[in-house]
Image (cartoon, rainbow, N blue to C red; front, side):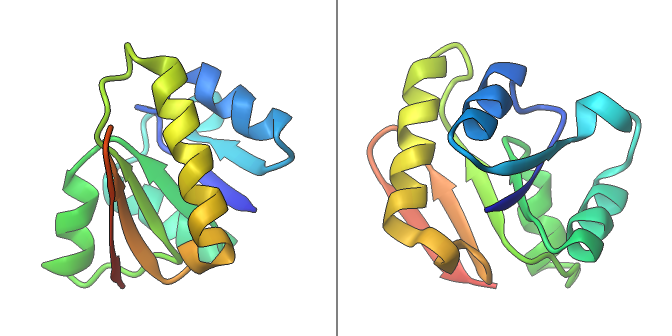
Length: 116
């Protein structure tokens, strides 16, 4: 699966996704100073699901109409790194390619999902 990981996502989670066979571009590795709008535009151009812990992206999508192929918002404390990884992989297993065209919020207990 194609991902664009925002700079607020941990490098450990990016490594785990890559290790699981996902194609991940990581903002922190090549463009840490990009604005949220620029990050979303890059995700759109590249056809990648945006992975972030920044709630501002939801506002850009739903209130300002910014296009993105898919958006996954992590709402788990990054200090719980293993749990974040487990929950993200569970979401990938559950939604698969259906993550494209969806806004999915991942927390410790549930997934919330809506169409973009």
